[in-house]
Length: 407
Image (cartoon, rainbow, N blue to C red; front, side, top):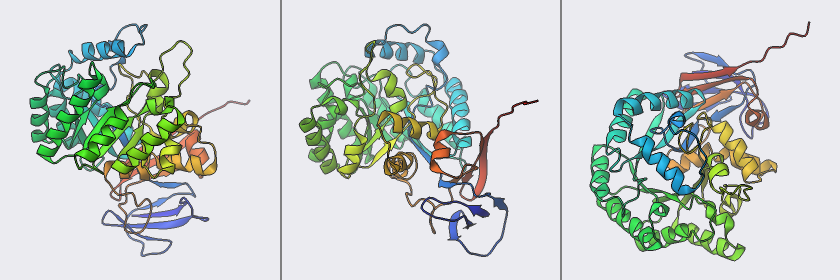
């Protein structure tokens, strides 16, 4: 493949990008062969990476009934009630629709959280393994076995988690804040570390998803990561409470996170709605990404949910995530806006352990080509086109247009 006249980040003029055997062979000059795409000066980015998404829950918002109670316990109750109606076929159908959107919007890799618990047992894992096979060659799909109903208060889930990992789940998830007491928060993480060591898999944990300053699971997870010798193998998602700490407490926690090699994923779209459920919310649901980045912590940004029992909106589009990240985290300078874009591309790639080389020679030809020519216009999501390229093959496209009759 040859992509003619593409505009790259940090490159002043449009260039030609040559792809051979699924890799970027050269930039600016090379031997033309295979299909050619006229970029027309549009911006060529590395494919988006979705670091945190729940495809097994997608498109279930219509099943929850009227929403009045916004407490965390009410969200959990609605979540459990809806899951009781899940079947493998139902999960496959909805997850396929969600991934179709993701691929068309330029997502080349996704880390998918899949509930494993005594409510839906292993139906989600079986369904998502089938979906992963169906989307082979279109999107790289990592599966996280996620015990959302907790561990200590959901007897039997540990055996289910082990079976999920045996079946092919890639990582082990968790959510210590879903337990009933701080002691159980600790025990939750201890039990997960034991299983992670048993299977030699990494941990990807939901942590402190409200802005209650008394939530201190992130600090606890960081300490236990060091105690278990798991530095560099733990990810923490949400981490909203960090923004409610005093400045000294936040700084100390961030230093500990950096020492533990923990990567952070924020989910500002959903957390803007659920991190602070007061009538007049004060929180922004975005954690402290600028301070984390300053401390050398890798930070990604994810969609989290799509039209489900937690978040009624969303369309599996990382452009939306990056733009909302700018708003929620007050990322306003040119450098900060670029960081927000990186949080859904190269930083998100680093978060999931895939190539973060971006658009460079030797990198995988996982790309998304926009008709828009600047980062600002990409994040404005103006009418136009985007084309998804996976391993040097066009696999998806999204386009929108406007029409006005001025006569």
